[in-house]
Length: 456
Image (tube, rainbow, N blue to C red; front, side):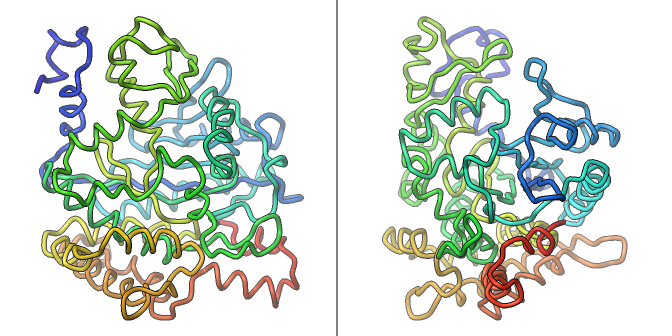
């Protein structure tokens, strides 16, 4: 395979081998494995709980500009501030419906992740307090309709919002009304990537169940515990799902590149603007036959952009992204990286996790994907329920974290971050079920208390 760092080929047309080499180039030795955590939260006006507009004294732009006092630099699209960045802190980005996302730095321990999340929320509360803005940790907007939510002024989002209704009925809900927490983890090479991909993809329904936290739509129970997860089943089948080929013989970087080449494009980014390429083929782009840019061929930056428009439950780029969890309270933001690091970063635990899932059938994967959003830990599985699998997965994760032995300044390892998950798994009761009980009892069927009780 040719190397993309070889100056002699930088101007040559990209080949499939180049794309494979680029993805494989994300491999790192174990000593360099890091933890990246991303989490989204709703920003709302404290006075009435409404979603933020972009402009205005209580808007998203004012919030982003207010955060620059903490060392962030603004990122512009034209005249519009669309994100913040800092070399040591990652980035603060803007989701389509005004959700605020922290894409954290690459950190060595879960302790570091938790400090990062704490600092971010502290800074948000300072600026939000001045602007009358609050922040909500939940997986789906509990009150407001699509039409109540402003689409943020990013060219990419305009293209997506026009394309989504053509390929699914819930894509706009995904864009405007969902929030997630996500962990990004490294691999040591192709075989390690494949093993981690298979384990994490099989166990993603466990994360969906443990983090289930989206039971309301427009002020009423919606019949789901993770409605956010259900939304992905009718967003765009060409770029979502559980990817059965990951479990088949021959899985590797080449197979995933072939999958991505068949995912329809969204856009090409040129000179500060997004060119509409929705539904078009990256294979045609590589051949110089892209209708949106006739005769032009892609750069590796175009490929990096294209890798972001696939939305499976686990996504491979130059690392693996765990995408199955609802957004939620502070403790469970820290728990997500702990859960996956414990499962995937120690060989003994990774082997045990593989033993847990290796004989699951394609039909069982599909069953879990369909039923877990509604039933969470009560989903029937084999001779028991998913609760049984969750408890075993937590045992394996805890052993992995203990084996890592990463201590904080008080001499505590990372296993304590799993405590809120043990509470859920042992009881079989998710936060979504707690919220539903509150709605039916203490809240007297009113949704507004969620903006106080689930706020950061």
